[in-house]
Image (tube, rainbow, N blue to C red; front, side, top):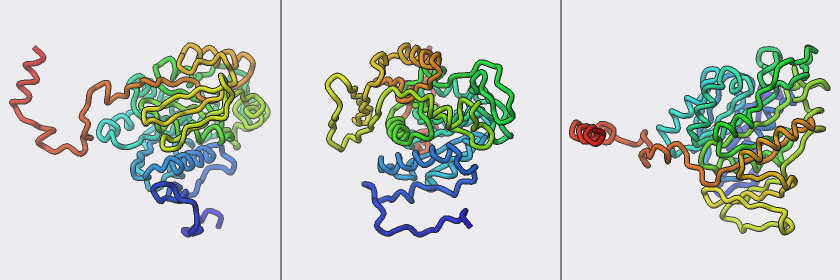
Length: 350
C-alpha cells in the first residue's frame, strides 16, 4: 500500500511566513517510474515555493502531454491547474496570463512537448516575454510512448533499444537565448542544491524564465550509451557557478572573495548571488552564454547554472500596456464601455 500517503503530518513541522508547512505544497502520489528525474524536479518546485512563502492558491500550473506534463499533479495540489493538449501549453498559459496577471504561472513541459510538436507555441511565448516560469524536463526520449529518441537527443546517444541517434539535437537553452528569453538556466534533476535556487529566482523574475532540466528516464534512457542518463550527466556536468537566492527581507550578505561573486537584483528586490566559476561568462550577454554553451559541448560537457538574465526585462503586460486590474475582475461596464468610447478610439486611429 505504498501508494497511499497518510493525511496526517507531525504537528511540529516547520512553517513558512504564511504558516504553511511543506505538506501544503505537495500533490498526489507520483505514478512515474521509481527513480524518475521528473519526481526530483517536482520536489524542488515544492521546496522552492515553500521557502518563498507563496500562497498555493496564487499559483497556476500548466502542462501539455507526456511524462513531464503529468508531474503538475504531483506538486502544489491546492493550486490552479490545466493539462492542455500536446504542445499547446504556451497558448493556454498566454490566455490565462492575460486574463489574470496576478497569478504566478508555472509551465511544465518535456523535450517532445516543447522541441517537437510544441516548438512553434514555445517560440511565441518566448518572444512575447510572457511572465511565467517554463520548465522543460529533458530526458532525450519519448518515455510515455516507449523510448523513441526526441529532438533533444544528442548525436550518437543511444536508448536501451541500442540504436544511436543520427540527427543534430535541438539545444533548447540556446534556442531560448536566441528568441529573446530574459532568464535562461540549465540544471540537472539530481542536483537539488543548484536547482532549488534557480527555481526561486525564475519564479521571482518578471518575464519569460526558462529552465532546461536534464532529467534521466530510468526506464528507456538510463544506460552508459545515453548522454542524458544519470551516469553520463554526473560525469560531464560543468556548472557556471554556485547560485544562492536571497529573499529581500533577509540581510544580503556574501562570503565570496572580492571579485569572485556577482549580485543580480530581481524586480521584487531579491538578489541572486553567483559565485563565478567561469570568468568568461557575462551573465548579461546572450552572446557570452551561447558561446560558452557551444564551447562546453565541444568538450563533451553540459554547462549548467544561470546562463543569462535581463535585469531590465519588461513582460507582455508592460509591453502592451494592459489593464492593471486583471480582466477577470473587470465588470461589464469596463469591458463593454459603449459606442461613445468606441467612436473616440476609432477617431484616435485616423
